[in-house]
Length: 213
Ligand code: TYD
Image (tube, rainbow, N blue to C red; front, side, top):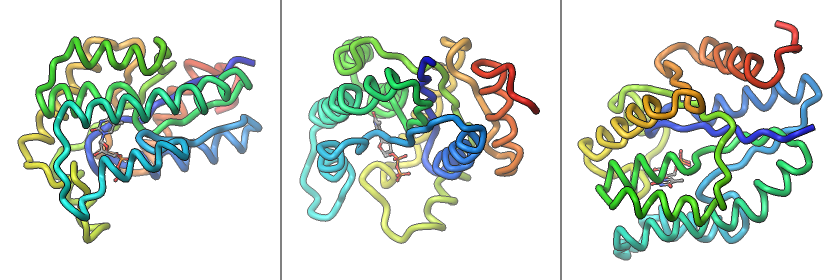
């Protein structure tokens, strides 16, 4: 059996984490072997890179290009160490963020050169694309409010101005329009149960048409 790379994307507070849990429980209940992972931070080295990227403790400056290269380094390690070997074993990989995050955050959000980002994405992944990207679309304000309700301390990216998050959102809008066969928009303002149901339907339709409804 071939593995599948299923990526969850969206702005801050879009509900990826709880949807990934629900989706993983559902797949496991069907006897499908699942790996839950994320970027940045899906490997041991990646956990260190994630800390460098997101912790705000000592306010060390990170240049925008450095940030981009650190995400790429995290991804290169993740693809090599986790994604490729687990796809080869036939696992369903549920990955919290992947190449589209870099296009949305560093490309649309920070305004870095898009062709450089695409080149780096290609170098880091060796061309490995998601089989399906589920974009959970929530309003930026709603997502940030959800997040800020949960946590007292915001990481480096969450602290960016609201305009930054709107540019990121626009990135997802444009990506979904460009790659409709691979990126599916799901209304993240719906209830948790409704979103989960839509995700089930998408996975069945694409990968497991034989699964009972
Ligand atoms: P996430 O894991 O969704 O944060 P949390 O665990 O707090 O919900 O994402 C981490 C942050 O990293 C998020 O703000 C988006 C950012 N990011 C980028 O800017 N570029 C990237 O390529 C990736 C993968 C993440």
